[in-house]
Image (cartoon, rainbow, N blue to C red):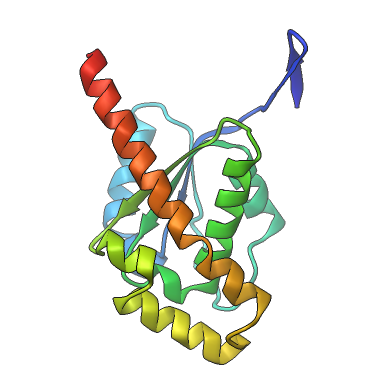
Length: 169
């Protein structure tokens, strides 16, 4: 943290962090998004490693989330089946609540936003599978389940921001 005029300022090493499920979007949507952001000179963190199922997010990845000004979550059909993605989502929402002026933008990629919010369809199936593995009352399950409504709320904020931007142009 740096201080400016008596206030703490958060230092960002990245403009954008993209959270995504590799098997769904790595070679399609995320590849194009990353290319365009890079072309415009926007410093973007995209995890290029093929992640192993069941791992917790690494300290380096956690730090990249903390050091990114904009946090984009690409919610695709298999996003919730990945414990890694869900742990990233938890970290993203924790950071957004800290008051570091980080912006969160969910992108609903080939999924119904209501399915994410209410954990239906693929999201409901994924959470049921996690419950079998970790137990329905585990802290991890409760934490993951609690992230979907705040993501929905960020969607609404992003829509309001877009509407305000249209008015000011």
